[in-house]
Amino acid sequence: MKKLLSMSIVLALVLSFSLVATTPVAAQTNRLVPSQYDTIQEAVDAASEGDTIIVAAGHVAVEDRLIIETDRITLTTNKSDPATIRYEAATTHSTVDIRGEDVVLENFIIERNEGVSGSQAINVRRPGVIVRGTTITGSDNVHGPHGIPGIHLTTGDPGSYDIPLEGVILKDNHISGEFMYGVAVATYTADVSIEVSVDGNTFADLTWDGSYWGWATQPGWAVHIHGIASIDVMITDNTFDDVHGVYVREETGDAVFDVAAHCNFFLGTGNWGIYSLSGFTVDALSNWWGDVDGPGPVGPGAGAHVTDNVLFYPWAKTGPDVPAAEVETETGTGEASFSPSQGCLVELEALPEIPPSPPDGVSFPHGMFSFEITCISPGETVTVTIELPEAVPQGTVWWKYHNGEWYWLRNQTDDGDNIMTIRLTDGGRGDADGSADGSITDPGGPGNPLPAVVGWEGSPVNRLAVMMPW
Image (cartoon, rainbow, N blue to C red; front, side, top):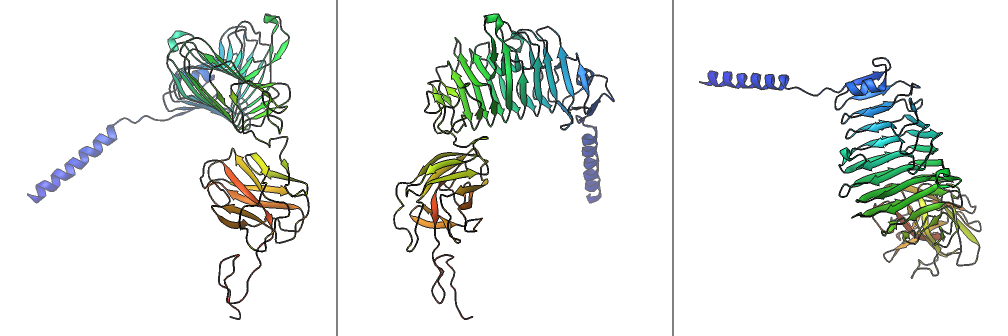
C-alpha cells in the first residue's frame, strides 16, 4: 500500500512538471535594426508584446514615418549616440504615431521637418506610454489654424481613439525648433480624460510663424493644455529656456482641469510663465520665475509673467542663474547668503527674535534665520553653504531650536572665515517638520558652542560623562 502511494505521488509530480513544461511562456525578444531588420517599421511590425527593438547607434531613418500598434514594446537606442527618425513631408502625419498601450520610446532623436498644420513629431493615442531621454526637433514647419506640437497627446481626433490616456510619462526629453507647442495635451471628446506627467524636460528655442494670423514669428509654448474633458497634468523639474511656459485654455464641455507646476525653472525675460484662461486655479508653488522677487505682473517681481488664477507663492529664491539667496541680518551686521546643494530655497527670512531660553553663554552675533528647502527627494541630505557678513571664530556651530529644546549642528568647514556649511536631512536631523516629505524646514543661526566641562560633571555638549584622570 505504501509502495502504491509512493508511485502515485511520483506520477503526480511527473504530470505536474509535464504541464509546467508544456505551458507556453511569452518570450521576450530583442529585435535589432538594421542587422536583423532593414527598417524600424519592419522590426515593430514583427514584434510581440514584451519585445525590445534596439536601433544601432547613429542609425538615421529618413522618410521613415513610424506607426507603433503593438502593446508593451520598447524602442531604444544608444544614449550617447542615439539613432534618428526623420520625417520630411508636407503632410499632416506625425513622425512617430504611438497607437499601442504601455509603449516605451527612449533615447532617440525625432525630427519633424516640412510639416503642415496639424502634424507633429510624436503622437500619443494610448495610455501608459513613456517617452524619455529623447531629443525632439523641427524645422521648416508651416503653421496654419492648428499649431504643430513636438509631442501631441490627444483623444477624439480621430474618433477611433476615444479612450482615456492614463499614466503617460514624458521625462528627460529636450524639445526645440519650429513648434508652436513643445507638448500639446488636448481632449476633443467629452468624458475621455488625459492624465500625464511632464517631468525633467528642457524646452528651448521654440518658435512658430504667425503669418497665417497676420503676426510675426512668435515664441512657442512649452506646454499647451486645452479641451472639453478632464485633464490632469503634473509639470515638475522642467527648464523653460527663453520660451513661453504653460498655456491652459478651457473650452466648452464638462472639463475639469487639475494642473500643477512645481519646481520648474523659468529662464529668460518678458515671457509668460503660466497663462491660464481656465476657471481652475493652477497650483504653481516652488518655481524659479527668473527673479528673486517672484513673477510678474500679478506677482511682485520682474520674473516670468503669470495670470490671476495662478497660485505662485511661495516661489523659489534660488535657481540655475542665482544659486544663493540673500537676507539682511536682524542684528545689523550685513547680508547673509544661503545656497543649497540640491533643491530650491524658499521662505528665507531673518528671525526678529531669538527663541526663548537660549543656553547660558551662547550668543548670536548675526541673529537667527528661517528658510525652507523644497524640490528634493524624500529623505535626501542637503548641504547648505552660508556666507555671513563677518568671519566667525573657529568652533562656531549652527544652533537650532525645536519643540522647546536647543541643539546644534557642526560647521563642516570650520576654518575661522565667514563661510559655514551645514548638513540637513529631510525628515531627520536638522529638519524641523520631522517628515521625509521632500522639504526641509530650518530655523537656526550661528553661535558659539557650550564650553566643554571636564571632571565628574556631565558635558552638556555631548551629554557623556567625562572623568579625569582615568
